[in-house]
Image (tube, one colour):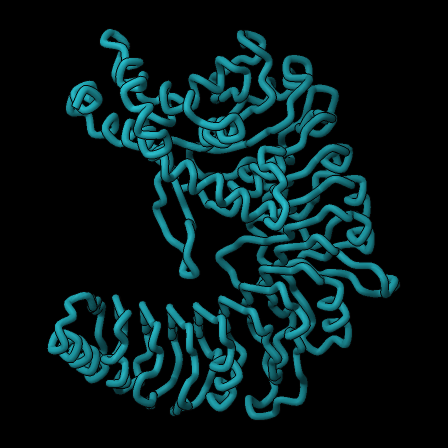
Length: 530
């Protein structure tokens, strides 16, 4: 009651204090209550106390949130990669760095300092954010400790006071301020370049007075995110002189990466944003033994890295590569050779860079993926004329534009650990899918999007663990199998752009669940078609 009274009815203070109490022993609660000041502002005291109770390894992880915009949903995967590149995450025997970083995040969530805003279909957090009061606290604390500094468009670097920061975030900085960066921030370890207005700077017009490139070479940088600079088709060559770089994110439409990229011998994460096509990597990429994540992001599906295979020794591997966005020629003989060089891959997006199509029934090639024993998430796009041998441990599978016959679904249904299946446009073609008994034993999430299926037949007690079914623009599908009414875990069925008869069948499933005493199933209907 003493602690509750100290909260003074402020909801955020209640949450923060509860987070502290949840991680300290009950016999320490009185000591904590006695430590609460009656004069200190209740706006800052809860956060100060919560911060002081954090383990030392979590403090920089929390302060790092100050680098992002207030009220911004932060992609969790990117955040965890940044923490790892900064060296915040401690190695633990039996756990990967990615898993440890996720544990750190969930610890902050359990202390009510971070909020998960979107969940992954496979479980875990997809995006997160912090309360505006926590953001304000992180900025002030980070500045006072020389951990992080924010520079805005009207900032003058020469007037900067305080400890020389190791991390710098720039928002719309003036060109002349770039010249001063090397002088005033010689020990900079991390640089972010952001825009408040979500438009791209043009790198070509930003030059220093001596005509040299606009980015001053800060040789101690470990993290460089230039996501709001648009490099066009040219790779920024000054980046290759940053020998200590662990994390690199750039924005542009470059077709290839220079061979000098292997100067970045410590590089762990390489992200290319905004690219609409394949990014060709040089043979020298195999020299970077620390690479863990090679990823491209764009609204277009057809983007990825082209890994070279010619003149590469058979023994050469990217042993530590965990995440890869791969662009390939679907009829190249080297595709399987590339896959054999990725023994530790856990997340793979594989897209094709050629549009040749064969008859959907003419499957005369096999993509062998079952040797990738660590692979958990797989996305295959535009592999027409292929059959697939899937990894046994696969948990998430997304397919699109592969033109597979529905008879090939049985190979997927046999995967014992599959939890998420997304069938996007033309992944499977044909009017009828008839399932077999015992398929999909652990599937939690199933999505159909823009498929031409008309008839879906499922035996009794199918999808026993299914929790969510999503049907987008499957206008020809006449009904959802009534056997789904026996799914005790089913929480949501969402339909958009489906016909009235399919909607009616879903409502009958809901009625069946209600008749058995279950009120948990939610139905969401959007934009039905005739």
